[in-house]
Length: 315
Length: 263
Image 1 (cartoon, chains in turn brown, orange):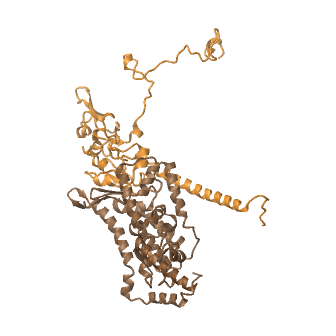
Image 2 (cartoon, rainbow over the protein chains, first blue to last red):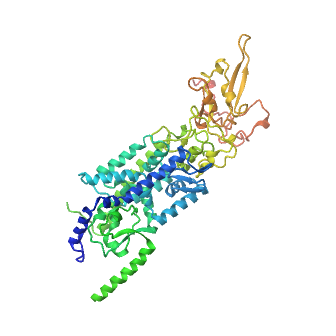
Image 3 (cartoon, rainbow over the protein chains, first blue to last red):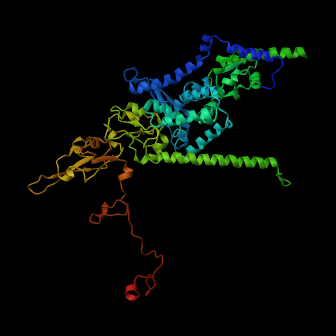
């Protein structure tokens, strides 16, 4: 951050970092709460699938709890859920899906449109556990940067997925997806699917930081586009922020924490934010935190009025 | 080296076009590689036995979302989802009759579980399913050796329709041969016969139709049958429509070469 305004003295930022390092052990553990919760939902959902498939978990007699996998499933025998990206590819491959799939895709799409598209990435997708581990290790190992890659390349991969689905006549990403390999592997049998996970792990660890989730994954790109309508977002309070930069250091998508933009908008507006909660749990000043978007807006109007009043006073 | 920019040429446009070409090259190479992987993955699909109601091979490849609900809902638990790196296309359901044959549930639960329609709801009766076709290796079938077996016939859920026995009497010292015959108009490919076959490696086994069925062609006629038996209109090319009417005394080259002494 080059343009630190004078109102935020460097000492304040350093003070924030010190505050972070001087946390008590319970405070440190508390700062992991979202990571623990995310692992619980990621593997809890897979456990529900596994239990239904192998141990016959049922709500009541002949009502399977959660049948299928992340591509398509049925909850308690009634609620269909379909991966809308997979459904879109199948449609483009030339197959008109049954109504059940379309309803399921609408349900999932609506759910993530409200919660945040990439909530899937951080809270559901099991590959996230692999890439998080690689990212965590990379921060602790002296891995030099090999090259940079534009993060927007994922949108081109997304476009390529759709075009190739038309050309090849199969759902292009679903046939090679390491996400599919991992989640199907855990529920129905892994085969050689773990190799793709090792590849992603090594890629993220040694070749490109946040390489898979942050640069290449077309499903992440798809959910990024959906995420712009999210109603749960990270609120930013510019009055307490000291620009210590710790949030950007832990964020897997640091470009979403563009301070200039944050100050203007008042919340993390980019759909690429996965609501993983790392920054909110870490921010030593509590300037970042989950909030409902309509409430943030109201909050913004209030601060905006305050800032305008201060500006007027200077004039 | 100094860039030589001809007059009237916008260097920005040139830069844009070069970038466009680079992007296109990148996308083209990546796309071709990806396409190759997809085709390579799909190449094994003709060998797969799919659950009842499965669409034709290419359509099934397009339609299956790889969710495994058919696998979970299969009462005898014979369906499997192909893991990565296996011998069939990734993530789609299949069964291997020798270890787990379809028991032909009348309510077809696997088909009903399919959310996309890859297992088509157009299948109303399980007897109409065509998952594969039983094929007999007559060199290793016990019945063809003259031994009494006929287990496939006895076990067949559609016995008398899908598998019939043909008796071939022999001389008095030997009993007649009871030859099992499979009829493609009734065989669903459930694979009960393959599972039950007592030979070390099954002498009757289920294969996808595409791999075993020939096609006669529509122009063949049963000459000994009544003309009404001919199902398709067959008119010999009208001789009155001459493409090249032969002039008298002149025949097509080569036809009369024996008479002309041209050999």
